[in-house]
Every structure is written in structure tokens, then in C-alpha cells.
Length: 327
Image 1: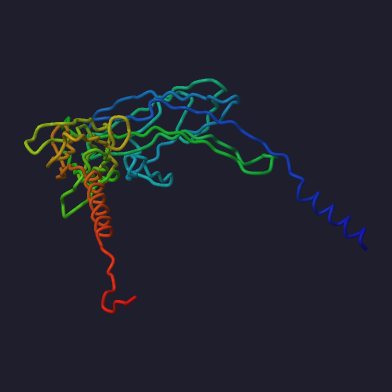
Image 2 (image 1 turned 135 degrees about the horizontal axis):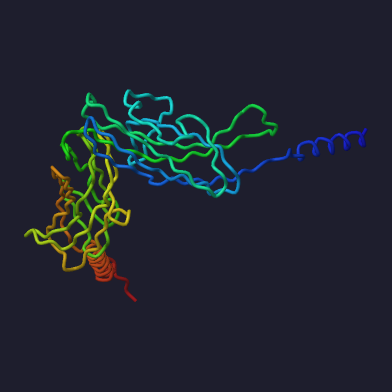
């Protein structure tokens, strides 16, 4: 009985440890340009060449399509819905002789292909922004596959921000929101911030596009004294903000805004974010007071400790003299 049990145990272990053959596939695709910004008038048409490259070691079957989007996250990434449709999808076409939308084509290993995208806007088109992504995905025909497991697909895309307008620069409406210090030594009292004058401080902010057209965040982050004298200037990273969305703001290196004050920066200051577009400006400011916060806390703590020590050491022991003893 014991031998039978051990034999069955070995069989079960062997079955669980035995793995089926697996297949790995390498994917390497690139698309250029990754972002396309277009201003076009009704009744006009343009063409744009997109370069697709197969960086992998095997041939790939691909399919190209246009997917509309209307939302983006705080970092500018579009929220795609492949099942969405829009009346302006008919404005797009491919001028390639052998490549069509939603039809598979083959791209050899290490080869490149040009997708010639055409955009023709009719005279009757509405004045509006349209947002779409040119998607290129690997194509797998589920019929005739003999392997088991999960089929991996790869997708790349180029986002297109297209403004249809008779004006070169239609009205935009940007607003800076949530502008505040996020890291460093500071105390907030009402709308006033007290910042340590020897500690770096980081600021966070977002911009909201309340208009109907895409806008770009060109501007400056600056710190000024109470007399409006600039003591620090830093550029804002230029990014596009689509209509009815908001986006996180960063400096030109892609990091949060940071200022390192010195002991010379004591007193009231103003920290400002200012954005300028082609036809409108917006800014937001916060009032701060720089003072040696850490030094003050350390000094107060030191004084408290000294006073406590003095009080303890200055106390005289109370001698009992009420009932003196006679020797």
C-alpha cells in the first residue's frame, strides 16, 4: 500500500511539473511622426507621410486604422475606443496603391513602409477640433493556428490633433489650477504659505482647457520679490492640451517646478505660473513668505531646553528644620 501511494505521488508531481512547449515572439515597431498637429480650413486637403518600421527579426502582418478619441488623461495620453465612430472619419484616406485601411499588409523584417495619409475637409465641415489616432497593429488570423497559449498583439499609433477653422489661431481658454507647493518645509495659513528660506521647495500645477480648440502651454514659472523683482525664472514644458481636458504642468526638463531659496530670500514673495497662447494669456499666483523656519524651530527648541535645564538646576532642596534634634 505504501509503495502504491508513493508511485501515485510521483506521477502527480510529474504531471504538474511537465510544461507544454511555449512560443515567444519578438515585436519591434516604430512610427514617425508620433504626433501630428494640423490647422486646416474647410474645403482644403493635405497629405502626410508616416514611416512604419519593423524592428523585429521576423516578417509581420499589420493592419492600419483610424480611431477617434475625445478625452485624454493628465499626461496627454488619449483614451481610445476602437469601437467609436465619428462622421469625420470619411475625411481620411490612404493614398498608397496596395495598402488600405482595415486591410492586412505585410512588412518584412527590418523593412520600412510609408503610409501616405490624406485628409480632405469638405466645404460644409463644421468649425471644430477633431482628434484621432493612426493605429498600426499586428494582425493574426485565428484560422489554422496550431500552437496553444496566448497570442500577443502589438500596437503603435500616431496622435493627430486637427483644428478645422477659418482663423489661423481660434480662441483658446486655458486656466491654471491646483497650483501649490507639494514638497519642502512650509506652513499654510489661509491663502498664505510660510516657506523655509534654506530648503528647496517643489510646486505642482495643472492647466485646464475650457475652450473648444487645442492650446499649447508656452510660458514661464517665476519667483518675484514683494517689489515685483524677479529672482528666479524657469520655462514651462510646451505641450498640447485638447479641448475640455486638463493636463499636468512641468518644467522644460519634464520635472515638477522647483526653487531653492537662500537666506537672502527672506520676506514676502510671489510665485507665478504664466501661460501665453497666440491669442490669450492666463496666470496664477500664490503669495509666500520666506523665513528661516528650520533655524527658528531649532532656536526655539534650544531655548526651551536651556530654560528647562536652568529651572531644574536652580531649585534648592528644602531642609526640614521644624523639629531639630538635640545631641
